[in-house]
Length: 133
Image (tube, rainbow, N blue to C red; front, side, top):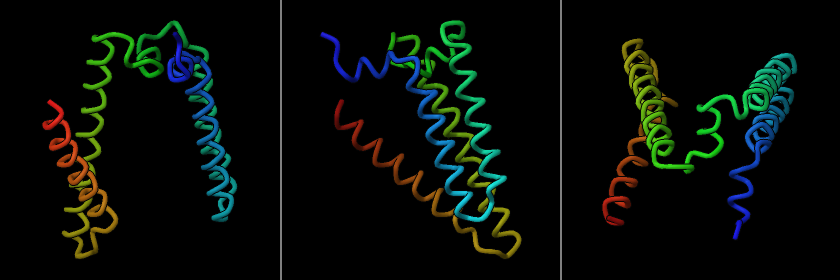
């Protein structure tokens, strides 16, 4: 029996729709903030990303994994490794930004809060996953 979750996971339109929706949110936020041009550029970037997802659907293994990472064990492992790599890059950038701000004699906020949130999330995930087995 196919569940609603399976239907969304298999829909080729879910990710492009989410990209367009986020583009609309960026557009609205920047428009409200007085930067309508920046908002249109942000929306355009997200629209191009959505178009790429649609055009390369079925022809790109990477897009298939983004769309359905739980498809098989290989896809899950690739998705997990890519997510871990992205996390390491973001954490490194946050740590460097904190150090640069401190070296300038300036407040490391909001980088310090992002780093703290990431560290706490990591520790909570370790504890929860370790207890699950």
